[in-house]
Amino acid sequence: MELFDVYSLFDVTPVKAKGCKVWDSEGQEYLDLYGGHAVISVGHCHPKYVAALKDQLDKIGFYSNSVVNPLQSELAHKLGEFSTLEDYSLFLVNSGAEANENALKLASFHTGKERIIAFRKSFHGRTSGAVAVTDNPKIVSPFNASHKVTFVPLNDIEAVEKELSKGDVAGVIIEGIQGVGGINIPTVEFLRSLETLCAKYGAVLILDEVQSGYGRTGSFFAFQRAGIHPDVISMAKGMGNGFPIGGVLISPKFKATKGMLGTTFGGNYLACAAAIAVLDIIKEENLLGNVTKVGQYLKDNMPESPLIKEVRGEGLMLGIEFNVPVAPIRTSLLKESHIFTGVAGQNMIRLLAPLVLSVEEAAKFISAFSATLAKA
Image (cartoon, rainbow, N blue to C red; front, side, top):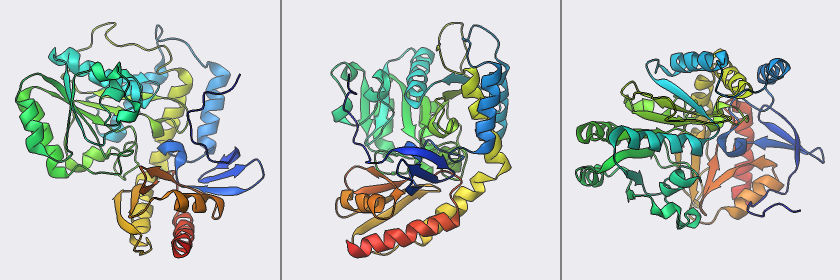
């Protein structure tokens, strides 16, 4: 049997990792500025994180949600405290796509309506509802397309109100910062107006913080720079630092009924132990401050080049948009400088480093990137 060949792979086989460094099977060291799709938050193999998982596995690794799991309550308490959203409720799942599926379902339950407003260039996942609100025809099957979704341009509040005023919208889903779509940032004014309009027309405001949340932008959630309070917030990726876990934060306006949501593996003992360790490490090591500092260093020291159109983003969620396809530049960074980076589309290099990235490591990237551009 062979693997179903759907991934474009780096020609690298990692066997060991620490912090922001990865070593392959040949012993070559790499600097990781991609974090495995923004998943590695507190760094590879952080000793406190590893100890928490080992300790939990020695006790109990799994039981279903038919029993009391104190770790779920501990995670909810710490998450509420750290995010300053103590009055929200937490529903635990396994991934970002699953978090968005449940967020959309909650919106429909709450309003009794079907239609969703999403945004151009959005990405919310690959499961049925999540892919339906994703603006990427390549991954939308005919089955997914049967959902009632209207796409509007990001930061166009008039287009949003035009659709909301029709009265059939269950919810509006928006990323804190669009990741896959090219590090596109909703303005503070747009987010505030969006909150006001959703309240006016009775639609649920869903903030997808799967990639932009958990400290990646320097705030715990990217939307918090606007001072708004969404109805539902989805999260995953950095939440477990590599262990699969996702979550939905739900405002007090929603009333739970037994059986309305459910999951087999969501919120299991190991996942909760991982997520609790991540929160503890972010707090103890002031990683939000580090993200702000190192992210600004990267922005301030980006080399000038006629190939670069724009650098945008917040914290350690940065996009470098080029006037040319970036594949050769990314390949050079990997093969010659041994640095992992991501992409968005054909013309953007995406940096999603672990939150523990140091200024010294950032400087190493800047030096290598400058040399690569000089060759290009």
